[in-house]
Amino acid sequence: MINLTLLGATGSIGKSTLAVVDLHPDQFNVFAISAHTNWQQMLELCKKYQPSFVVMTDENAAAQLTQQIQDKTVVLVGAKALDEIASHTQTDYVMAAIVGAAGMSSALAAAQAGKRIMLANKESLVLAGDIFMQAVKDNQAELIPVDSEHSAIFQCLQGGRSGLKKIQLTASGGPFLHTPLEKLVNVTPDQACAHPNWSMGRKISIDSATMMNKGLEVIEAHYLFNLSSEKIDVVMHPQSIIHSSVYFEDGSTLSQLGNPDMRSVISYAMSYPNRIASGVPSLDLTQNSPLEFYTPDFEKFSCLRLAFEALKQSGSSMGTMNAANEVAVDSFLKGRISFLDISTVIEKTLNEAEHFYPSTLSEVIHNDQSARAIADKIIKSYA
Ligand SMILES: NC(=O)c1ccc[n+]([C@@H]2O[C@H](COP(=O)([O-])OP(=O)(O)OC[C@H]3O[C@@H](n4cnc5c(N)ncnc54)[C@H](OP(=O)(O)O)[C@@H]3O)[C@@H](O)[C@H]2O)c1
Figure 1 (spheres, rainbow, N blue to C red):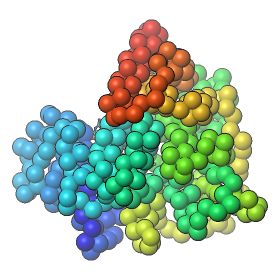
Figure 2: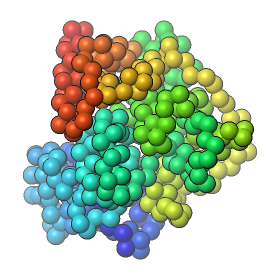
Figure 3: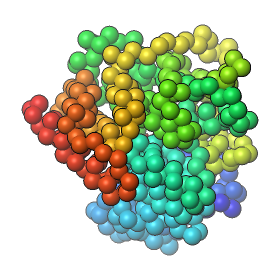
């Protein structure tokens, strides 16, 4: 029986992970789960899975849950407790599915404890890729990507990387693939969250609409597969059937295909190197033709351009970009700035922030905080 610690249990990835667990109760035990504020859903999950530990990072939510809980589950509170359950000696696998920079420390704790990390929280690599990958190496942790594109590349590289020429991440283009730039001025958060293929949390849905999500994935791919930005390509593919491809020197291309459903990716990470049922039906290619492909529009999707630039500049730029994006997306969701302001806020923050090469986690966190303060100041100036 594999003991699973699920960070971000109430989220979109968290729910899909539990759906896979439900198919294989003889193989996986839900050992620990976490959420931020949603104590009501956590109460239901505790009743169903009887985990040993539950972490609520929000204090009020933890108090509410503690009052209501009747099982033997221990309720822990605060961000530090995430590190504890991620590195607990009884934890075998960690699903790192907290959204945003808040998920970085616990993912790193899992790496330092030598766990199998199923990494959905791409921000861990964007903010602290060098530190994170070193911790994985030093502690013989096992890092399995939980992002459909990176899982696809990981799967395509199972035969080795001899003659590897480049990788190509596919991008659906989100809800605005065919919307002209000038029509994006007045889009609402609900319009931007209405992804045509994937059902995801609101923050990543906005990132998909701006294509910052693809930008973060380019950086994620750089660290996961140790490739320079010149060897990472992006192609628009609205059907999201080809999840990504690897190009080889001999003219061959390997791609991984499937229905757009994260349960396939999650079950692969949970069963690697084997495969188990995920609940996702097999692909019927006759129902998905034609498959379309386009070159990305870097002017309309300026967040993708900014991510490539931040990766080339390296160092603190990637964390600065991520922090400014988190602040800007939150402000957009709250109606404080427009959709197109998101990339402007990020670019201005990058121009204003100090550029350096963080070598410790505290430097990474310091940079994240100062970039957030700069982005906040820029957004206030819009009011
Ligand atoms: N969704 C996808 O299809 C998908 C695909 C690939 C990669 N990812 C990545 O996976 C991660 C999770 O995405 P998601 O779509 O599942 O997000 P989501 O639905 O928004 O869920 C986020 C989870 O994180 C918790 N959380 C939020 N803020 C937190 C904080 N400050 N401290 C601790 N926990 C916090 C939430 O708890 P509450 O519910 O209590 O707020 C929830 O459990 C992201 O990094 C995303 O980029 C997602």
